[in-house]
Length: 364
Ligand code: M6R
Image (tube, rainbow, N blue to C red):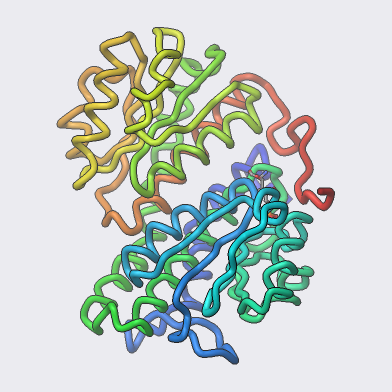
């Protein structure tokens, strides 16, 4: 049932404040203000490295997880798409935690990668939305997302719920590795608890985003830029736009622009820049300005401070609430999803059932 919404995708975008809160609730002990994972029958503190495997949107959760786990737990993290991981000859060292991320829990390549890791004797964990799925049954530690059924082929609420669980995993690893004291953990928990409200604030820009969709709907190519955890979000934005609007889109790490993609820039190529204010902001803005100098039409997604500093020459801006850098990728996912959605609606494509795509990819 789509409720009052025109498409399942839009309904699922709007469910995010509730389902992300629901997911966070099962990973946060409110009294202790601590993160908590489900019970496990192995010693998490013995983990010395993490390998994260997934496909598509779930793989971007893995990339963001890499930034978080490295930053907080100081453990080395490797991320790969399942279809590459399973066919190369990966080096699996002792004391590795192998993490799979999957909405369906049935994606054939991710399942095969999970079995490969298990056969190699690696302890496995899964961030999975369908609790009865094959992956949910086979991982050593199931970390469920509580997004509820996701019908739209384009993943939205599963993505933000997966990020919430990934953040909990990073914080828990950091604690057991002695890299986070109580005060620091409490502070992070406070930021996580703010996520649902911040998503609500982001949703308030729905109409404004719908109004700018026409400027992108006519483009043949669109580029997305981001740095740090906003780089995987740039990849996610491009994937979402491709999937449902059929516009060719690519996401790049901001600093990579000058190593090739800037050659594509002219006034027909919209550039979506995802840049919350903060330590990485100035660098990304200078990449953005290099593109603007070559005629790029920029849509800048930032907070009030960022827009005041660099929004002047943008053809459009999307204002996000000011949030802590940790939770920014969860909150900034919302305008990225809405932009893809409204461009697809403007183009009249089948948003919930895009051509050539299946919700669950059970073929290799
Ligand atoms: O069910 P999974 O999370 O394992 O699916 C992985 C990808 O097939 C999926 O995220 C795909 O990229 C989505 N259609 C993205 O919107």
